[in-house]
Image (tube, rainbow, N blue to C red; front, top):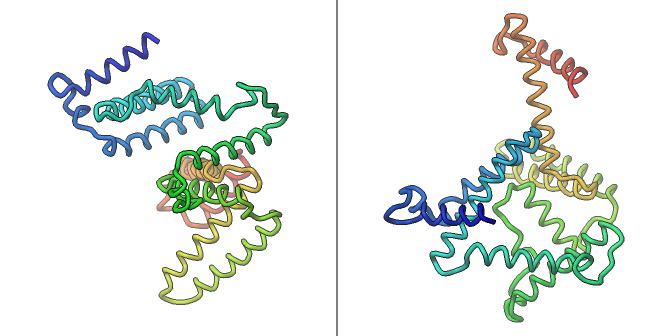
Length: 266
């Protein structure tokens, strides 16, 4: 706890308008949000590289951002870091009655279902009766996440009230329907807006299929990106060994090397 107290002191010192850091002291809650997103992705990158030292470092950076936000909120009289921790402790205890009370859960599926029920009740309790009448089910789904994650959250929220596919085979049928609509849109000239709409529908449907298969769409696409990088790097490195650049290679040569990469790289 001494180190945490020191961190809180450092943050206050950085924010001091007279003796602090000019950059830190002029930041606002809104101005650092982009940096927070960057730090979150840097943490994910370290995790995917299995870089334990990097994970430790990036977690520290994220903690600094939490301290940063709490200090700015405290300056404005809203809340402080202690209030954040207190609210978090209460939330974790409330959402884990099978650990902190007499409730019994026998499977992770039961735990997840109860978690969603408790969250729904929390949303209801947080609003007045009048606000509840005006507020819609999807209103508080964060819209500033990556689009794939937002799509998954929207689908999960709709599914919580029964608006969902009952069989993944039905999703395949919908995928084929959306694919055909996309083909039709592409076949027409000067139709970019319709193509964009149909492509979005197809992607939304893919996210739905992943959700039904209990697969994280964002993670699946990140893994595919990593796989593409590895295979393309193989093409470039192999060509370099032949004293040939990517620009000098033919498409046929690169296709052949791509097929070779698929067999050699996991």
